[in-house]
Image 1 (cartoon, rainbow over the protein chains, first blue to last red):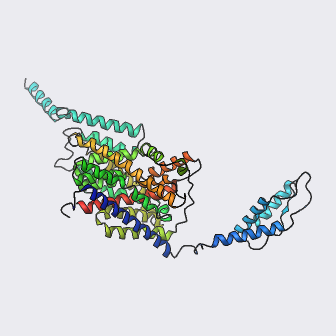
Image 2: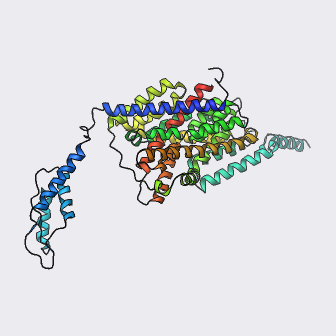
Image 3: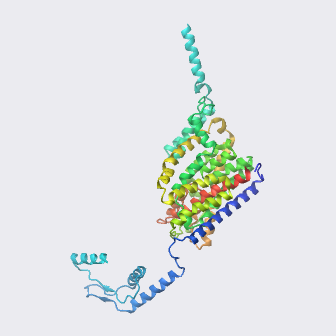
Length: 128
Length: 377
């Protein structure tokens, strides 16, 4: 163009602003399109997945609440009941790991154990 | 006697060729300006990498009789060619592209709107400049200061108003270095404590496919739409492609380090050398600096205001503070969002969220420049 199309500052302002918005909105649609056609993205995170997971977790928690909480042996001075939120947290962690099935019981592990036993337990745990 | 005559003539000749014989008050003032900028760069650490060479270039430009821009080729003339022929700004964009992670933008494409809103300052300053008497091309070049993007400001002013290059470049880089001082009061003024405390959800994972395809698609789309800015946008995206492809690490490393540093030295020194007293000490310079500040403040306010709208529209899921990062000073503006957010709510990390609008701001400013070039050139 040899000469400016207009010299009215407000018209220039409005036209430019409109063009900038249109270009950037179009670019955002392009980004979404790229995301949609991306063949390498992980299998679509289903919209309903969190709900299913939530339902499964609630069911598991209910089962555990209904079942008996058992302990290896009575620990002197300790209340053997495990708080519900602790059970919920354990069940949620299990469900999150993708382990299916039911948690039927939660058992307290004795705390006044020797260092040898704790070591062995953690070794077994880490080897799994 | 003959010896004394010869000695006197020689002394006269040395004096006539020296800078002292042609030194003006204007040169003195500009050297003082250069020294103040040097102080700001090296003592106050305001953008020292840019302001340092600009300040020294300003001092060099005000020594009379240097013949930097005379007939014969010399290094200063070569540096000036790099600016005059728009070589350096695209090369800087290559480095910026290689340094920038587009991931936050790709994870939240709607942040492009914040980048667009922050360009409001550009157009407010353009209108203001025309009202105070600048012609439309000069006004466009002045307005782009509001984008807080040095290379784009230089690129546009070379094309539309080369005689204003020095003032525009200095205003742009000075305000960029003052981002941490200019933006927070505006951000606090326009947002409530509750808005500043909004915690945003984690960004989704962006795949390599998206990272590689985006620069290619964006280049094709924007270059076809706005050819005048193909050099800038194309180099930005090429740099980013080097970074994301995973097979051009050496090129990416060169673009973001050695090449970018070399070009920064040339561009900043060359910009400083446009600040000679004759062109710079004019009333327009003061106006440009004032208009630049208005542009910058307008841009910040535009981004934050749209951020507020988005905050309400999404049910308080967006912190409006990230809107201020829509001015494209990468990554300072994003860091300011982070700092203001952290002050309002310790532990609220907004940096990665603010990088989306920040990158959008770079693209938005280039698009604004392209639109003005298409309309006005």
